[in-house]
Image (cartoon, rainbow, N blue to C red; front, side, top):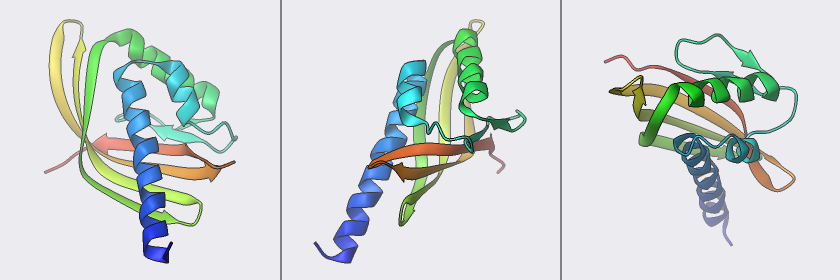
Length: 135
């Protein structure tokens, strides 16, 4: 396999890991999120409007809180760019989130960056950062 084909294969693997993250969010499935996220101490997460969360226990608790508040949520990804640098995968995109909270359905767009690294052959999320998208 030539280097360009190898790079494309790695980008497809990162794309698949990123899709698994959003499927877990849509399904409000903490166990599926646990399979996507790294367990190393350096994991970090910034939800829109939240402070920086460090470590899987704090991140897991934030998702549980969100899932308790949301009746349903659906995610789409627009303008997705994926780059791979060795064992590091970078996904920059616009998240489109349709969610229902307390009977009110809203759609929001966020600029998001997900960083993945290869750990024992699997791509694991170790940083998620999303912020409200400006015009």
